[in-house]
Length: 307
Image (cartoon, rainbow, N blue to C red):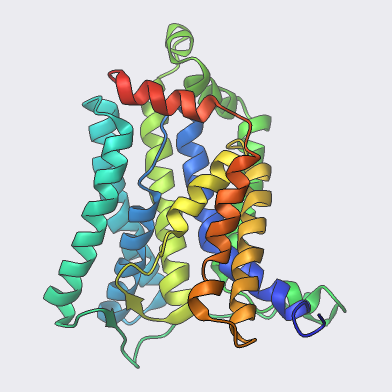
């Protein structure tokens, strides 16, 4: 058991949960304004590719991340225009965006880099790892919390800021009201569409950072379909966390830990394909305990109404 559970396992869990947490927070923003964003997987995948492309062309990690954010912002703007302005079915739009992102990244990989399957360049530099001076010397906590990329720390910071924005600011109350009861909010002068557009664009930014963490923070390369269902796991984390920042963080911690555990099992000579199923088995198991039906009602409403 000591070989299986140690501080390094928790360190790995924090590293691998960051993309899930960032995307799940983006999903929570959309859910709070009444949009069920199924396109998180596609947003993340496009962000991962754009980060690698930006790193290759600009030779700078910061510019690469900014390039990824810009690309996914344009992609999320298309999602927002279709689902908010044209009132298209938001579930169908999200599924279409996932398929579009998968095809677009595969096509771009071959058109830009003339390779199939994966792209790697030895000149590319990944995200830096921060060894926090005081924290890394604290017994127990240091090995867990120190030595991560800036995006890992940013994920938890965003969760805290989101909680403060939702429950401690006047603008946050208006944001929540625009999703709870759009008609009542509009009658009070709250511009619901503006909050919906803002939520989708912010979701795009967070998914771009999630993709950048995957391609630059963990591997420094891009492979086709490298998100590997993490966007859908983030969607489940959003639902389990009731689209609240703290709940979403707790759910993401669970999924991050299970993914880290699956990686650790691979080191114990267990079949790789079996251990890789572990996070998804937990995702399915988690749905058995999920009691809130509001998301289902929203999804059904969006599937039959003029949303």
